[in-house]
Structure formats: C-alpha cells, structure tokens
Image (tube, rainbow, N blue to C red; front, side):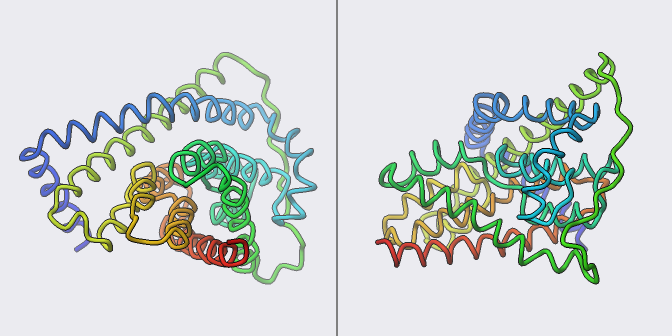
Length: 312
C-alpha cells in the first residue's frame, strides 16, 4: 500500500510539474542558489574535515579533550562528544552525518548512536543569528533569547530521551569503545574523504531543490493564505517556512515567536529527508528521529511561551 501510494505521488508530482513549468523553474533556481551560495561553502569544509578526522583517527585526540566535560553533561562517550560538537555547531545534517560515520567505524555503539541522533542534529548558531533572528524578528535583541532557547531545548530533551537508550545500565555514561587503529594521512584517504563529502553535499543540494519546487507548487493552491495551511506548508523547508511564519501578522508576536523557534528546532521535512539520507544503512530509524524532533519542537515552543510571559 505504501509503495503504491508513493508511486502515485511521484506520478502526480511529475504531471503537476509539466503543467506548471514556471513555478518549477523558480523553485529549482531558488533551491540551487541557496545550496550553492550558502549551504555548499558553509557545510562542505566541515564534512570534509570531519571525514578526515574520523578516518585518520584524529577524532580520538579531540574527543579526549572534549569528552570529560560533554560526557558529564550528555552522558556520552569520548567519541560521542565529537558528534555533539558537530551537531550543535555545524548545522543540519552534520550531527546525523558524524553520528553515522562514528557508528560505521565502530567508535560508538548502536545504542549511543541512537541516543546521539535524538538531540545532536540541530540548526547552526550562524543560521539562527543571521537568518532566523536578523531577517525574521523585530530586532537584534531577540538573538540572545533565541539562541539560548534553541540550545537549551535539545539539552533538556537529551535527559528525557536518555533512559530509553540506557535501560538497565548503572553507568553514568555510555561505555567508550576501543579506538580504531590510527591510519597515517595519505592522498588515498584524502581522495576517499573528498568523494564521500561531495556525495553527501550533492544529496543535500538535491533535497533542497526538490523541496523548494514542492513548496512553490504548493503555494499555487487556492487556500495558500489559509492560516492552518500556511503553518503546515512552512514545515516543508525551513528557509522558506520561517518567513511564512514571521509574516503571519494576523497572529501576535507572542505566538509567532514560539512557532518560529519551534520550526527552527524541528528543522523541517527537508532537513529530515537529508538526515534520512545520512543514516541509511546504519539501522538508525528516521521515524524515531522525527518523533524525538517533534518532542524537541514542543519543548522549545513551551519554553518560548514561558520566557515571553516572564520577560515581556
């Protein structure tokens, strides 16, 4: 049934694209430009360097430094702390990519990888400041509360999710696995890492373009200005969805701000599709990830409502 529904959806999308070539062109152009001008130069260096660190075992030495502190906060192993750093600082889908690579190379267990995926795949601070706040909130004064809440909510959720992945364990942290044998740097390793990085960033670009096209086509429907529909539409792709919520002047700011940060913490369906691509072949479940992201979104929105009531 699911297979047939998917096939019918693909056929419907193909026919729709044939009848509305202009929105398809506009959506594809916007998606490719977003990928080329922002995502590619921002994300590709981090993907390449993280691949090199994992394959040459340089990540082991970094983890020895970051592991003690992050291990106490998140109850992760030393190697798992590297996924936390990538997931909180580098943006989607770096948390999922690094977690999957650590799992594939045997540096973390499947249970720890599942736990890491539940909270360490987030929007980057640069995106939050430069786009979410500076371009879609009333003033720069919203930078500090927005960044704090978007970092605080996954930290809180990590403590909520932890018992589900560490059942019956009396340890305060996930056990660290034996570090992989150190591999000296060579051009062969560099070539392998580069090709893997190019493949990953190309897939990210493909998903951004596809969801940009779908968003443009969805905006052609006659009920595009209907409030519930616009809210649902905003969850397709975060870059297009954030302005949709910000421009809903029919809602007061005390409602739009929680919705805005809630969407930012969730990441949108495009980011979820990118995450699904990164975890393929690892056994990690995208359905579980989506459920946990919805919980994080709810926690973020509730924190926003509480802070707004206290400060404003």
